[in-house]
Structure formats: structure tokens, C-alpha cells
Length: 243
Image (cartoon, rainbow, N blue to C red; front, side, top):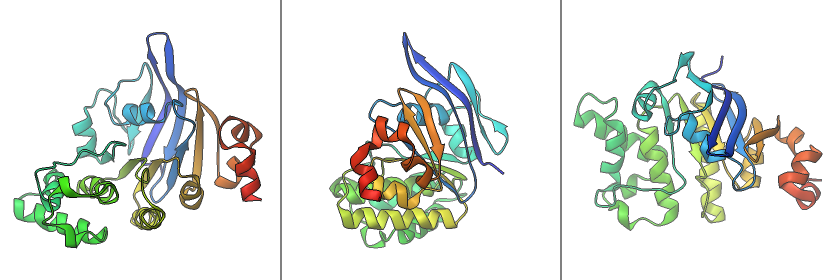
């Protein structure tokens, strides 16, 4: 059964159609990746899913609950959370207190929120950073902190927007491991990522966008053999590297 369902999502900005007829489902313990060139509409889709933008047509549902007109905050409370490409921690607060802010969505007390936050940070191998000011973190740790904040809200569906952008190879490897562990917990994951080797390693299914429209969907093997995808995005060099 699908946790998150998008149906015919369409968004126009004046005369520009940024997203057109995008539909997909995300099931528990599944990783769906959305790929495509810059400007393909990927982040606009995330903004439509999470309520930061309203679609001109189409719908979003979470566990069969129609999210039309529901605010981003209420969607988060319902179990739909996201990260952002540009991470913006509370720079003056400690790493622990940043995560406590997310945990307070469901915690009945500050003590419970701190317990949740410490558990999430432990899962992300960040316990040693609890007392560090978030403003002092390098980009790799800021990316992990962004994930920790949203995980502390206990999401049913989680949207990850380029969480590997700017990371060095060893950090990418760690992030892949973290995401795989989230799948094991039964969270439905939708991932935007330009790091193609990570996408191919993680994804159960891939949706490819070009100019706001879906041009292919399928398993990594199916998508990498699709001539339309190779022409529009991946290119012949990628195909040769996979052969």
C-alpha cells in the first residue's frame, strides 16, 4: 500500500509550466529517486508535495488522506517531512538543540524531546557533536544535521533533496548507509540526487523528469537502458560506464 501518492501534479508560473502531469507512489521501505537535469522541476515537485506551493492541477495524499489545502506544518505533523538543498540550521544553537526542535513536534516534554534527539543523533553517528554549535559544522555534518532534524519528527514519508551534494566520497558512502537504514525502518523515501552512482545503488525505482514532464520511470536497470533518458540526461558516457 502506498504511503505517499502524487496524481497528475501540474504547476505553472505565468506562461511557464514548471511541472506537468507528474504522478507516482512511494511505498513503505521503498526508495524512489527523481532525477533530471537542472530546471527539470524536481524541487518544484517537492514543494508541491509538502505544501510550499499549491498545484494548479493534481493532488497529493498521505496514507489515503488528501493533503489539498493542508499547510506544510500540518503535513509534517501527519508524517510527511523533507530536507532542503540549502541547509539552514539554527546556527546559534547546539547540534542537540537543533534536533530537539524537530522532536518537539511529537514529544510531550522537553526531556522526551532530548531523549528522541539523542537517539537520532546516535543513529547518524553524531553523538560526539551534541554540544557543538551548529554554525561551526562543516558541510558534511550540516547535511547529517538536516537529516537528524527531520528524522526527529518521526516521518512516515521522507523527501531528501540533494543530501549528498557537496560531500566527499567517504561522506557519500556514509550517507548511503544512513539512507539504507531508513528503508529498513519502513519509511517511504523520495530522493532528489545528482550523484548518479548513489542513485543507482539506492533506488528501487527512478522517475526521470525533463522540462517538468515525466519521460521515464522504472528500475535503475530499465532507466539506464532507455534511449530517451540517455539522450536527455545520462548520456552515452554513462551508458558505457555501466556496460
